[in-house]
Structure formats: C-alpha cells, structure tokens
Length: 246
Image (cartoon, rainbow, N blue to C red; front, top):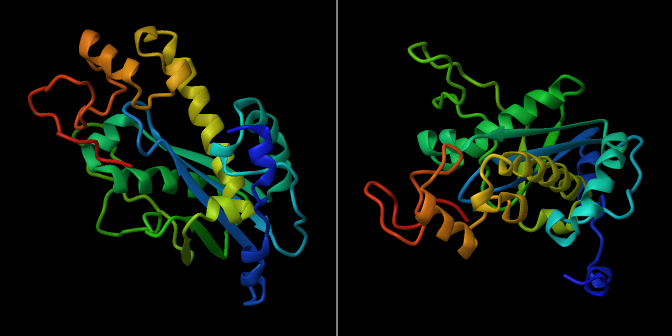
C-alpha cells in the first residue's frame, strides 16, 4: 500500500475504548492476532492495555498490515511507553497441529494475558473480529507439561471480551496490539530463516507464497511447519486438503 493511500485511511482512535469508561471501567485491553493463515511459524497474539484515566492518542499507529516494516518497528518503543501494560504471546506450529487453530490462538492469547497481569488486571477486552477465541475455557487444557505429565490449565482471560469487526482499523489499542504482535512474530521468522534459507521466511514470514510451497515440495516440511495443513502443491499422506486458518 502506498503512503498516499495510507494517508487517506482514517486513523484509529480511542472513541470505542472510552465507551467503557462511561460504564465505570478504567483499564481497557486491545487484542489482535497475527499469523493465523501462515504455513509455518506460530500464531501470535498482542495485548495492549490503556488507562482511560490518563491515556491520550498515539500518532502514527495503524493496523499492522497498513504499515511498512520500518514504520512498525519504530512504533514498538512508543507503544510500550504509551501503554500501561503490553505483551505478546505465541503458540507454536506443533501446538496448532495438536490443539487446532482456535485453541492455539487461545493458548497464545492466554500467554499474552498472563504477561499483562504482571502489571495490571484489565477490566475489559476489545478483541478484533467476530468470534471470542480469547476467553478462558475451563474444559480445555491449553498448556502441556513435560511428556507423560498431566495437562496444566492456563489461567486465560477472565475479563469480559467484546468482539468488534475491523477493530484493528478503528480502535487504537487494538491497532497497537497488532503492531506489537506483527513485529515480534516477523523477527522470530527472520531468525528461523537463517537455518532454513530455502523457504524464504525472512521475506514471506511463513505465509503461503508460491515460492514457499515449491520449497516445501522440494525439501519437505520442517518442524516449524503446520504439518496438518496443506503445505505444498504435492499431495502428502495424512495432510489436510486445505489450510486450517484464514
């Protein structure tokens, strides 16, 4: 997307978050995920908490998809200073294969939630999208201990979660969360690419480009690939016919 087009896109603001202040809440958390549709690497969830008693706007923040990599990276320290608390959680490709996509998103979100709880307990959460995959589900063991040990329940998010379609475009806390998650996940994929250069993860970040699929066909999947998904262009025994995520 060109800079001119980005300028025409309305900046996210705190209008929606402030409606919760009118209901007596103080600490509002914005939450967004990245990596849902990738073939390799984790799903990552960012959470950014704002204090409605003192927070002001933050210039330059947009949904991470609307920003260049350098713009996102420059925003990270500003977002960290602006937020009363922030964290990013990840769920690995192996966890996505073992649990399924939505439970894996909840795993990553629970890890981010535990991170912000070290500083503050949010009163309410604004979650991008139309489905609440973040709230704690008591019946689902999200974190697994060493092999052979019983599963350990994640605490997970127990605050009220309000889903909002395209919140990453309109809600400043959610857009900020998307930036943190995107920068951290991208950096991780660049790190992995050093030992797995054939897949181009430093460029595609694990997403389904034709070159990435062709490399999977030629070399085979790694332990960082989501092996229950259709990865390459060749059929593999036991693989899904389509990806499990958007």
